[in-house]
Image: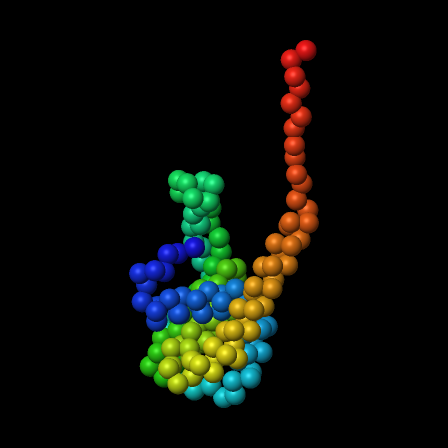
Length: 154
């Protein structure tokens, strides 16, 4: 996780919503977009394209960094009313990247942001958190505790 203590609040807010949009399901984003009504005209600066990125890890989560491998990502950039929206998502779903970019551009509008935060971002974050909690619960249920018995010298 990135330390955001020195990050300006507007950048931290954008990082938050971009992360939520990237982790949302494409169908949830389609539904949210349908509820927004007619969108203003938008243009693709960078059509959705598939590529790869190097993923880094840390030994023990906090130790020395190492290259874990590559993962497939899809990126997109759109302009909407003079604002540029970006979408980066894991995998090969071009539509997901385009929807994330559209919502990023919409959320940059100060007039639209409160409504979108309330009706799109908050529910998507709640769904993401519930899915994470369920995965954690399932993993905890399968946890195995090991113990050893120490034998004395006979």
